[in-house]
Image 1 (spheres, rainbow, N blue to C red):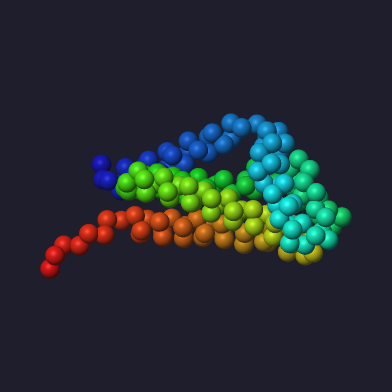
Image 2 (cartoon, rainbow, N blue to C red; image 1 turned 90 degrees about the vertical axis):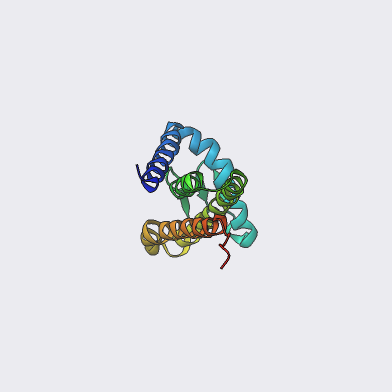
Length: 167
């Protein structure tokens, strides 16, 4: 079997395994624990730090204020992009230490970018609700994928063997 096909199969298998594990976590565990502590509270703090007059509250999986109620649900957490980046790094032919650094930085980047994305979506729904559907459905996910692909491309180029044959 061609090496590229094997890499593709391993990539798809890794992605499927991560996705399967993701859907094994109960919804109430996401809403009340993971999303509340790992996303919503942090976004509320970020929004209130940037614009204290918003007075955003974190309640379970909701960002609440007098202007908006933004609910974070499964799929709004950047997991799909995170799984793509992790799967790509895991199957890419590179040294273990390089993969570990790539995974840690990639996970951190996707996580932080998603926090910014959710915070920005709060402002969209609070001040321009007519734009929310387009931004939430098309623009924001596309940007997430572009960030993930850009990160992986940069990491992969930096991970390739750079030895040159003497002339």
